[in-house]
Figure (tube, rainbow, N blue to C red):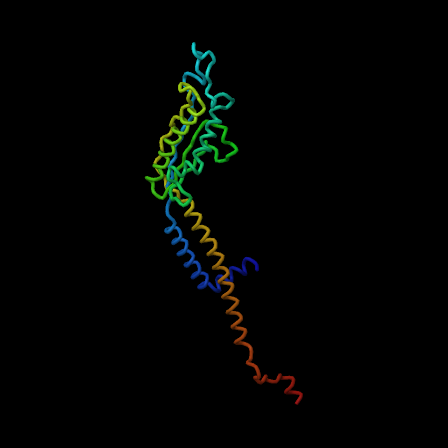
Length: 237
């Protein structure tokens, strides 16, 4: 069916299309208002090498220098950032922070690249907290940031790194003011409007088809009714 024919159907059955569109707008508005607004807060931390360097100078009792294992390879800070991202995103740490699969407050840790394959490209640790409450969104970011410092220090102790060579995790951007995220609500309302528009078009075609069928049925003579003779038949008599 071509475009102009579709337009003619809509004009002919405008009351059906208008009713369907009103229902669609009402449904879209209801979806938009019932979906809760989420808030997001973010903090940025950077890994740095201490001023004393990555190893401890030889001492009389320890003639060999002691090196921090986390810095004893190329791209040490980048790899350390990758390790911290994996640790903080793990289910064990998340559970200890009170985040479960059904929690409305969640967080995500990365190093500035959402693609996991790029985790070793920068010595950053970025924490993004999301919650239905702006206070909870900021609070979870603060808790994860503190946990990151604890985890980094604990692992360096486990590796036997000299304390003076410990990698530092410095907060460059404090947890930001929670921002409302309405993109999901807008997309849902747009989907409802799109489906409603198609439903309005389908309802108009269906109503037009039904009305045309009823009109043809009314115009047809009832079964068994006498048919008037044609003019040619009357002349032949």
